[in-house]
Image (cartoon, rainbow, N blue to C red; front, side):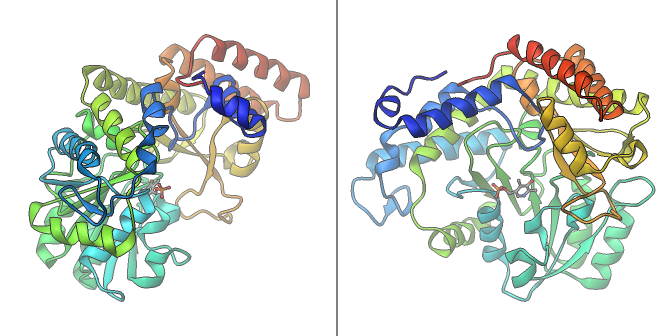
Length: 415
Ligand SMILES: *Cc1c(COP(=O)(O)O)cnc(C)c1O
């Protein structure tokens, strides 16, 4: 574990929480598709004096004095983001994914404008137009879905809705979809009706940056990504765009949505982007996908209903209905044996979002620990056994011990 000697001495109560959470992260298997383990260098960058600075504005144009040095860190992060994704322009200030998306809409749209996005229970994100989210309240969203037979986005259906509704912007991206996105086709459809193209690559940014999935950045007008999912950085986000939209995007982030950027987080983003530019990271991204495919194949062999029949990326959604357990119960059952997953809706879910039919599983975090196909096969076997023997306490205790044994062999950065 990183040393926290001042925290330890001054505030044992908080230190105790940090220590217990570090232990939990090391002792359990993290299969939540949106989570990962940031490196020790990324963690250290977040704990620096850069947090003390106010730097509203952009490098060279700040509203506070004393920003000559801070400008350097923001410039480094911007340069690395542009290089990593082949972007014309990057803004590294967004505090997280949802605020980044708010800034994108703010830059390109007026309240009430029509936008098209993937429906939440079909794999979209809240900020893609769900009625309880600011996006659904401020903008007039029409939603597309995945095909109920194939579990994939049906591009003919997308084209049909786009031609009929003529949205000002089309959003492509997801939180729970396991297939490659046809960016080119989205772009053609948008061109046909004169709509802006917005790619939200929050989940797959790390895989895209490593060249393991198609990159929409050179193609689309504007792209947002979180930095803490497959990209393995600090919690935060980045917006990239064509040079001609740079001014609008910058103004939307500050002063439109945010005040001062979190410079210590910008430093950590720069470190993570630096890591992602290394050859090691490409191998990591490749293994994330191999592990996810192995996991999906194992589930299919055991007669689990993997939505769309497999995966092209780091995640999958599994419908648990034929196994006689709901998504919420599966989440809680697996938590008891030391595996974290998140309940998930399935397309056209007959059950409510608090207790949906599926679970979403992902491989970014276990791959960071160094786990490969062999371990993934064991993990799926444990999950299956736990579900088959869900009322057997002795069996679940045994599985929990076996999982703990495996975790001891694979270290976690910072824990
Ligand atoms: C995770 C996610 C976000 C939001 O990120 P936060 O940092 O949690 O606000 C936005 N869009 C997509 C597609 C996501 O998966």
